[in-house]
Length: 203
Image (cartoon, rainbow, N blue to C red; front, side, top):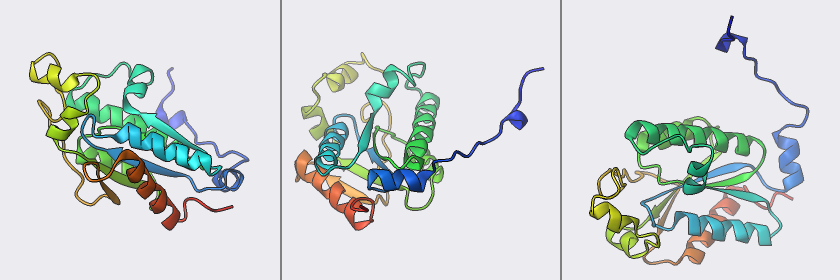
């Protein structure tokens, strides 16, 4: 007889979130950064993580491309696979938040419903949505891998912003205009927001 979900039990452990947060000196949170390809998500997340590191705080960056090299390497880019991609990383982000870790999630995550589902996995205040805003025209000029060019030539199917939709957030906690502000300034605004929300500076 094979096991079923009824045979699975959640186990609480001796060291909980509060103890980990006390050790780390900050509160666990998911900073979910969404935007078009080449809008600047990973670059800004890296800047913000380095700023936290410089102030003695621990964080981690979950990058969309990196995750697809391993955990989600079995997924493609159909709407169904995109939804599963975000579901899985939402669960990972939830675990990191529960471990007291500030985690930056840099994923295109094009669908509002998928981002809402990722938010719903976590408690109130544990999920911060950041819209990394750049138009298709601007993002195309920043494209180091030439993916937009390939998409326009039909070499890449289901490419967000060209042949697949992107649904911008309607009420993100933070809206970053990456045309008027550079990556460092945008990262600084994220750090300021974390401070205002009491995520950092808990030592």
